[in-house]
Amino acid sequence: MTAPAKLCILLCLAATLASLSGVGTLCAQDASNLTETTASATNTHLLTFKQIEEIWGKASLDDVKKAAESGDAIAQCHLGGRFVGGRAGKTNFTEGFKWYLKAAEQGMAHAQFRLGMMYQQALGVPHSRESAMKWMSKSAEQGYTLGEMNLGWLHERDEAEPGRTPGGNYPEAAEWYEKAAKKGNAHAQFLLAELYQYQKLGADQRTNCIQWYLKSAAQGHVRAQAEAGTLPELYPNHPLLKTNPAVVAFLRNAAEKGNLNAQIDLAKKYRTGDGVETNLVEAFKWMQLAAASEVESSRVNDAAYELARMFENGEGVQKNLPEAWAYYQSAAAGEHRDALYRVAVMYDHGTGVPKDLKQAAEHYFLAATRGWGSFQSNATDRLLQLYADGHGLPEGRDKIELQLKRFANAQLPRTQFQLGEIYYQGKAVPKDDGVAAEHYTRAAKMGSADAQNRIGQMWATGLHGTLDPQEAASWYRKAAMQGLAEAQFNLGAAYANGTGVKPDPVEAGCWLYLAASQGHGNARKKLDELEQRMTPEQVVQAKAKAAEFKPSKPSLRPGAFFQ
Image (cartoon, rainbow, N blue to C red; front, side, top):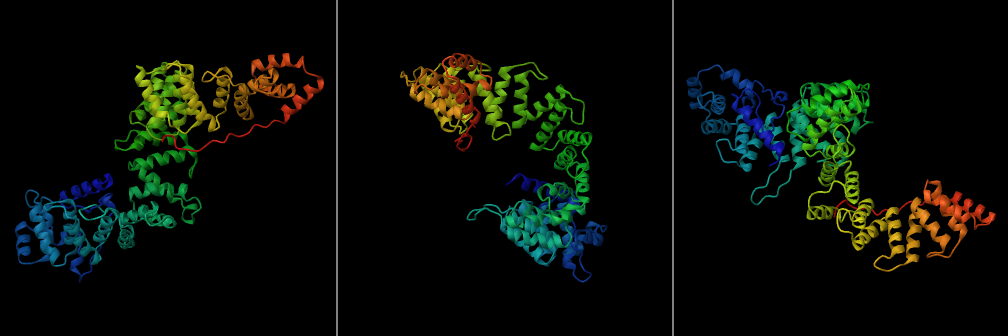
């Protein structure tokens, strides 16, 4: 069972036990917003809980029992409620079920609805979806609003039983939700809106959520108000939202009532000026409230992370690095990926905390491996760069190699290049040119200019024990064509010396001019030597060729971060 479904059942049970003083339902969120069908004077089968209370609520228990035993269906329904709600002594689900059943068999829709709820929640009877559906259907088919809404809920949250295939019947759920929604039930309107919003009824139907969120929000449904406040971002051109000042008011109302999502979304609106005038002080206020929420939700970590950013950058509050650090730490403790990255960066640079490359590396690793995050590739890149330089290494070679294996199949050229560097430099693990070349080659084939240049250098110095200056020059050219200064210098030097290519002072001058223009120190020295052997015409040609150069774009092969 999903967490939302469990929450619905727990809330409903609480409502039922509280002397039936509210509208208990299978999906009892925002119970204060629920409405029941008002029965006509002639149709007692559709009497609501409140109407039944008006008839029998002040009567003594003995009088209610006498009437119930004589066959009065309304009294039977009320007596069932007294037993279930603990108003006839201790809570007694068995007795409550017995009297609800008698009333339900006489056609009382409220009793049928209650039986459906008791079967679904196993209150006094074993859980039975079949029986829950049976009684909830009887209630709904009479037009009882709570029966309609909760029958929709049962269809939406289908469950697996022996011989049954799990999966919600969303069209059927929508049909029953709409019946209750059209009668003004705010929670049914919200649930129907959710079906449309999450495309359970088809992507082409999604905008239908707008009218139902707005109708529900207008009745004060807090969760609907929270959703309504974000609608303009999702549907910026919808006519119901373009000039609707109530949308932000809905969001604010939900935020004021403590709705976590509304507080975060309202803070974002004030921060960016979306639908309201930019106000960083207001943004900070609402984000701080969200970060202090006691709701068990990953969005509390989201709020803590955003609040940390505001402290770090001085948005709506005086810049305060210790506070930023504390909130980043709080969010990181909840494994917020971006917060893990920011903690790593602060350790890395000693920002607001003493510099600690080992702690930085640990947090970079977590940020890189705890699923997708905005800075996942940045975290991986910096972690491997630290290891290549011999910094922040974990204790033990086995642990280092185990971590490196996590990245071995990464389909990112920069990651493969850095892995190559680790084995090439030999500071984190024993130097291994063969393994380094494997990673460099993967990166090079994905378009990494750094890797292409490094492979060229390895062939120039004897990769696998074999000198191959022609292969080296080929790789230098690939990287040089992308504009890498080091590769341009290496290729220019090759042409100047005739190493792996036919000597050509114009080609040499072209590549050395390009490298020097990017500040490569050795390129200028090499040019001084070369120009002494060049004719004036060759110098002009080399400079002209360099001026016409346009770097190519790498052909990066797309792929998942991990395979």
